[in-house]
Image 1: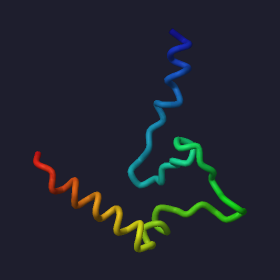
Image 2: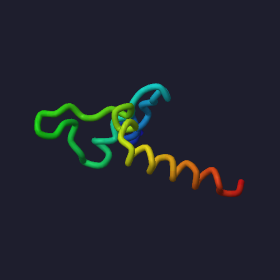
Image 3: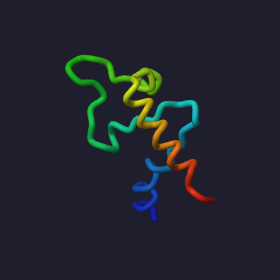
Length: 66
């Protein structure tokens, strides 16, 4: 049972909604490229293309029937 608990322990980490989640480890990405700091969620949302994609996804999900 301890082996199963050890495998599942990292997955038990919880995030508060106000914290930025680090998705780079999930997708095999890097924290920074070419010495530049990784963009934050706030910096990404300032880009019109990212904001538009998030808006389209949100409006699509909002239009789905319950």
